[in-house]
Image 1 (spheres, rainbow, N blue to C red):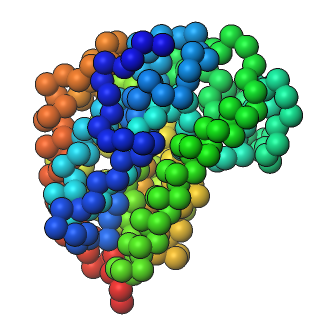
Image 2: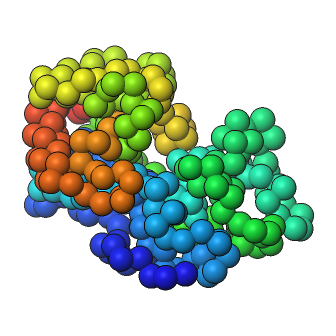
Length: 288
């Protein structure tokens, strides 16, 4: 495959940006789907070109959140593309039909995401195209989980644990982007698994701040949150997770997968959002 024209900042499977001057707030920001390093991993296994594969990205979300550490909040970003490994899926969301030999890990046979071809090792791209012309060896899935999936989740879990231990609670903002055609007229979709992943006051504050900045928001429709929101969000234990879906038309030419002048503008708005909620949420995210 041809190298990507937009290499990811950072080396290895993930990039962690520490808070400038040390972490000052009980918050974390993640971007699991903006990875665009297509040079490593695939090794010619897919017949689709990079331009087609890139339509599956939450393209340039890493750039939207790049200034967040200057507000005293760390970030974590996946550098590998979601069509290679999707870390917003459970490790059991594997499709045995993709492999020519025995699947040696537990499989969630009832996963709708796997059935649709969008499991932890995706079978199709975001526009429904088959990624592979033949079945893979299961060792390939194991390699991807070992080199990409688990390093991301192990580091994210460590960041959550460290933050909760220090402050008494933690809010993780898991940032994604959505196609304009699926946005249903919203600029921002806020997902909290219908209240199960985040305390009401905290999620309300997130939504109210976006609205105060002039954005049209909806809650949980059509995106209520994926694996990260579902599995990490435990508000009763002080771990709050909110998935944020940004309408790509705000900052991206979706056909060419290239940033528009709106990227810098929305990145600035996101920083304004972060600055506001870090202060207003402090009473709810600290040791009692």
